Length: 375
Ligand code: TTP
Ligand code: MG
Image 1 (cartoon, rainbow, N blue to C red):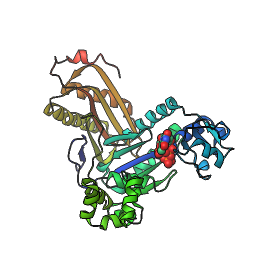
Image 2: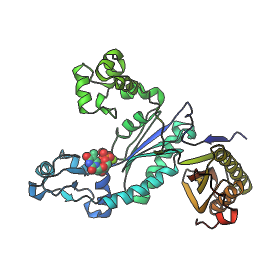
Image 3: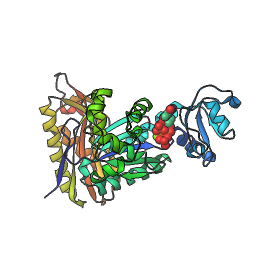
Image 4: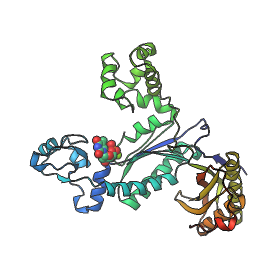
C-alpha cells in the first residue's frame, strides 16, 4: 500500500518541497469586538486609547476595515483618529477577551499543522508540506477559514508559499478574508514589483537606506550587488537579498526546544475499515515510541488526530499523572481516544503526537499508575 508516512517532529530536516501557511486574523481586536457586539457590524470601530473628544493621548491598537477607509490605522494617535472620523465607535482594549479568542483560534490552527509556530496574538505559521500539493494546501486553508468563521465568527487571511517570508507576504496580499497561493515557480513574479519594506524585518529605516541606494523594489534588491549590501548592512545584507530572491530556509517550529513527537499517515484511499485504521494506529504508536526511546524521553500527554474525507479535522488528548515511555500504554491510549471517531464516516488521515516530556531518568510509572490520568 503506497500510504504516505510523514515524520512530523520539528527538529528534522524539512523535505525539499515545503508548503507553509501563514494565517493572520483580520483587524483582530476590532473583529472580536464586533463579534461580541453584532450591532457594530459595518460600522467604523476603533480599538485603543480613550479619544476624549479629540483630546485623548495614546494610540489606536487597531480598527475595523470600515474605519480604515477614513485613513485610520494601528499606532496612529487616537486624537488623529478622532479627527478623521469622530462618529466612529471607540472602544477600550480588552486583552483578556482577545487572548481567550486567540487561544481558541490557535487550537484550531494547530490541528492542521505538522509543525506549528504562533508568532503573535493573531498570527501563526503552519507547515503542511505533508499534504504533498499546493491544491491540497489550498483546500486545507479553505477548511481552516470556514472552521474559524463557524467557531469564532471572525475572518482571517491566509498566505501559502514555499517559505515563511513568502507565506507571510501572501497572507497580507488580499486582506480581509483573503487566500493567496504562491507556488514556487510564481515566487519571483509575486515578489519583484513589491516595495522592499514588504519583507518582514525590513523596517522604515532599512527601507529608506535601500531607497537611497536606488533599491526600491524587492526585484531590485534581488538583483543588486551583494558586496554593496554587505558594506552597508553586514550579514543582514546577504540574508535580506536571499529573502528577496525567495530563499528562506527557516523552519516552522515551536519556541523552547522539543515540544512534541508526532507522526501521521494519509490513507491511499479514504477508509472506514476500523480494523485497518486501528492497525495503522498501532503502527504509528510504534513509530512515535521508537523516536521517544531514541531521544531518551518519557511523555505524559498523547493527542490523536483524525481527519475525515473532506478535511474536517479533530484532535483528542489524554494527559496522565505519570511519565512513561511504554509502547503498550501509547497503543492503549491511542485506541481509547480514537474510538469515538470510528463511525461510518470515511477517514483520510490519522496521527499520534506525544508531548509534555520528562527528561530526568526518574522511576518508570507502571501502566496502572499511568492510567489514573484524565482524558
Ligand atoms: P495585526 O495583525 O498587525 O493587525 P490587525 O489584525 O488588527 O489587522 P490586519 O487585518 O491588518 O491583520 O495585529 C494584530 C492585533 O495586534 C491587532 O488587532 C491589535 C494589536 N496591535 C496593537 O495593539 N498595536 C499595533 O500597533 C498593531 C500593529 C497591532
Ligand atoms: Mg491581523
